[in-house]
Amino acid sequence: MQPKSILIIAAVLGGISVIMGAMGAHALKAVLEPEALQSYLTGARYNMYHAIALLAIAGNTQHLDPKWIKISVIFTLIGTILFSGSIYLLSTSSISGLSNISFLGPITPLGGLLLISGWFSIIIAAIKKH
Image (cartoon, rainbow, N blue to C red; front, side, top):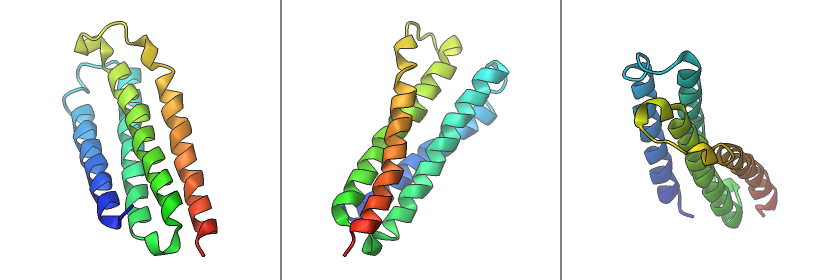
């Protein structure tokens, strides 16, 4: 995976994180219960953490095995979508009108597992680089 592609993915995730964080800090602060707001902001925080991680990967491709870079980026992207996305939806369900989304509960830890896998893939990428 080329650094340019990774940078684009990182920028999209980072931009989404800023938008979602701003919504949480301003618009949602008045309408969500404190616990739901904290969950929502956790989703935004992890969204940004992983956008930054992808920026670091893009800047260090010369030190990492290309195959494992791709695996790490895919795990990180899908993990962020599942982890943060499910938290955004679950924490705003009381105001969004979405009902019967409890099936998303198990999606959050699956996203977390993919994020962890993305981090360990970076370790493998560094070890495998010749």
